[in-house]
Length: 246
Image (cartoon, rainbow, N blue to C red; front, side, top):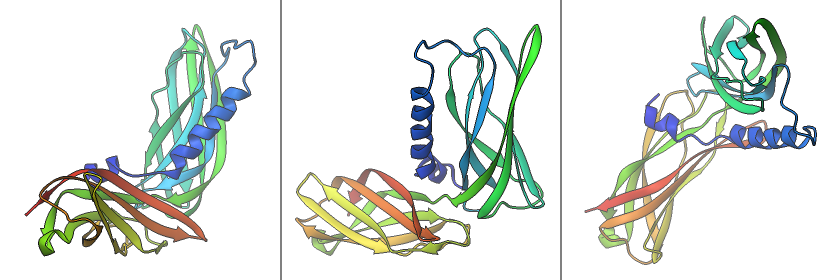
């Protein structure tokens, strides 16, 4: 997977993780006493890389101040495929969220369910360990990336822009969109249908102006790459500044 694509993926998992972290914080004792033992809590949803090469798992973890972390790891098992990855826990006495990418060994991960376990081992003279196990719902990750330039067409009545999308096998691709606006005066939209086979595909999308006329120069672009699984929609989003060229 291209690094640029991965950098721009949009995840519902992140929003869910933040909400869970806030919930944990709200439930903490009012006195705010620092933790005296390590904790680890695996969240129940995981994101599947489009090519199945990894799962992204979110973990809440903490350990008391002045302790040293010996290990902080997450393992995933799905049939004959497994994987393990560490995460950068430091002992500051408060709970933090970690997003852990677990690479697959022995095959590729798939949509469905998987089993995860996490372990935190800390040391300060003696050692203490915290463990958690969780059944994961494996959800699709949709990756999208817009090109940095768009081609002026039809005397400014449209532009064409490339968008690269990757999504896992097993999801249903839905009509997806690209919009381009310029200086608050010109705007337009176009559509495309992703191909979900685990590999990135690049589409050249014609964006027709429905207000104003496009000109050579800076513009803003936005794409939503949309898929569906079990009646639930998942999105890959990219947006940013582009250059319209003649």
